[in-house]
Structure formats: C-alpha cells, structure tokens
Image 1 (cartoon, rainbow, N blue to C red):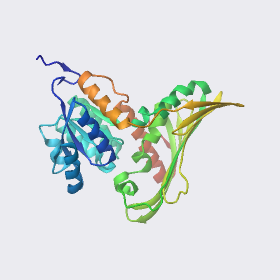
Image 2: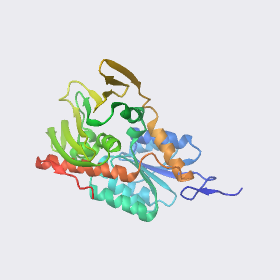
Image 3: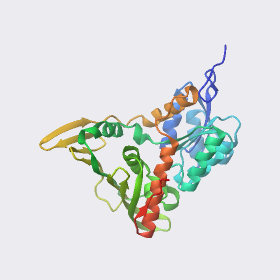
Length: 337
C-alpha cells in the first residue's frame, strides 16, 4: 500500500505515537480519546505517583515512564501531551521540543513569560507543533458571546466574574502558590476570553488577596484586574476560589451602546430596554476530546487549529502584567510594540 504523507509529514497508514505527562482529569480524557482514535497510539505515561501511574497505564494499555524527563527523550514518541501542575509546564514543553517532539500543553504555557516566549521561538525553529489548549474558546459559551456581540453595538464595558466556593479546601496543588502560580496566570482563560474578544490591552490595574494557611498554601484567593483595551473597551476580571466565599458565581456581562448581554455557562440574555431575548449556550461536554481530535487533524491533514500559540502567549503577557501590577500596587501600561 502506498503511504501518503500529510500535514506535518505523518503517514496516514501509521498512528501518531503519543506520550502523556500527568494522570489527572485532563490526562484521563485525553487518554480515552487517543485510545479510541485509530490515528493515535498512547505509548507511555509519566506521573507524579508511581501507584497512580501504574493504574493509569494498566487502564489504557500504556507503559509507565520513570519520569517526564525520560519520557520526552524516548525515540518512540512523536507527540507529548502535558497535563500536569502549572509550575512544570514550561520546563516540560522546552525539553520535549529540544527532543524534537510535537507538543500539546494545557494552559498556561508557562508561569514565566520569558519561558513561554522561548518555547514558541523553539517550536518555530524546530518546525514542531506547539498547541496550547484553550477549551474555553471551543465551548458553547464563547461561541454564543462572539455571535451575539454585534447585537449590542459598540461595546464599552465588560465584566467577567468566576468565583468558586469550596468548603474545607484540601492541600491540593491548585491552592498552592508555587504549583498553581499567580491566579490570573494559572487561570489564564479568564483573560484570554477578553483578548480574543477585544484584541490588544493597553493597561492593567490588579489587586490580589490571599488567605494563607501555611507556607505556600492558601484556603482562598481573590484577584481583581481592570483592563483597558486599544479599542476603548474597559474590562474587569474577577477570579476567586476557596473557603472565604459562601456562594459560587459565573457571570459574563457585556455592556454595549445598543444593549446588554448577560451570560452564565448555561444560558444568555440580550437586554434592550423592556425586551429580553434568551440566547442558547452550547454544551461544555467533550471539549478535551474535541481539542485532542483537532490536534490529530492538524498533524495529519494540516487542518488549522482553533487558537494560535501566539494568542495564548499574548494573554500570558497581559496576565504577567497583572501580576506585576498586583505586586507594586500600581496600574501598568502594556507594551504592544
């Protein structure tokens, strides 16, 4: 049979060989998709806990790697998918690219802007795929927001509030400064929604509060960032989680000169005076599977991805400016040159 090479040079007759770093929720969903798709072969997995990793590998018929460092060095892998703690994203991505692997990484690309910049430069030099997952763009909520924007005319203010009430916070990495990172970097999708909708930001003013319980751990955090965009939009991102909050909230509000849009993850409303129109919001289910399938399509067929890694890097630039603003207690201008 004649082999046909497409996309990044892969043959349609042999599956893409994949390694996963991580054994958590996202890794499980990725593995399920890879195993079910004849175009891919899950070869190896590296995890933090040997027992958990062994069980994960048994479930999906993969080999347990000693460490992520050993995994990225393997000659029998084409693609590495990074699904581990935020702190390690940048280092693993760089190591995988240095070892000539294509890479998929859950957001954020890195906790350090300079490291993220190096990764994207290296991927371009190596001519390797570097895809940063941003499933918030794949979901029905973002699609509905983008489709509805013209109905409110010129937008002048937007506010995105995501607060998660957690009773009795465990000692998890998502409540650990060093592993999760600055809140709006670790949860960079909040700012990426804004930059995808409104383009370049020109300034940011950010305040952050933590309720620390022990060194490196906190039981709650609150982050508030005000952003000014080049097109004149003023936007506010509010991110909070933990025991301090007694009620969860997830509301995206957009104020335009011809109306107001209010969205929750389940539904939306267009308000124009006395008129209120309900807007349907598509499902959030199956997004990791969809993201994985998009990557396989890109590698095999050259199909464009739904997000550019440079767009993710720009959101990281804005988030890093928010971090610095919070540290010095002043508004910062964002250099877009």
